[in-house]
Length: 152
Image 1 (tube, rainbow, N blue to C red):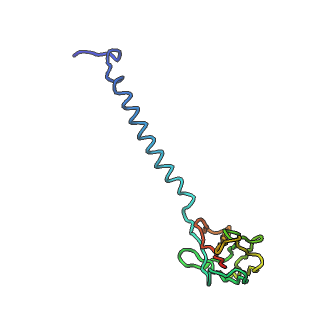
Image 2: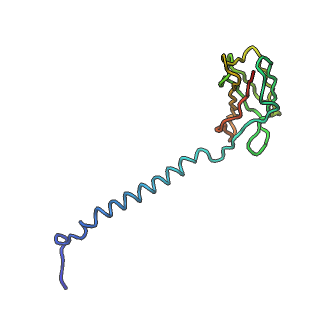
Image 3: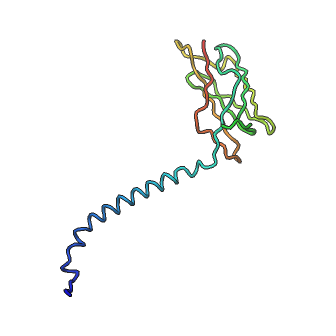
């Protein structure tokens, strides 16, 4: 039996760079999968909320009396939520907000006609709607809500 020493064995040196590259590729792939899994952890259990409405299109110069029902994606009623209406492509003086009561998911919004305007030459504009869920719930408003449309 011939005895070999590690000094004379060059096979390990030849295979080492290939093994390092393979380990690096596998490590990066595993890290990428773990980061993808961890990125979605904050969204587990969150349910998107939105609103249902009577009439989304309103004529410029008329008061906007709008009833909204706040619901989650399954259609369940949401109480204790706040709705904030702000300028979009239509101009609005300030903002309007309302909060649902503990027993109701309906919000009645009254926007004075003098508070909303369109730019010169603009025929259609929008107002943005943001919904803030109760802080003690697992609901979120991450998706864009339907906009309120104002037209001449």
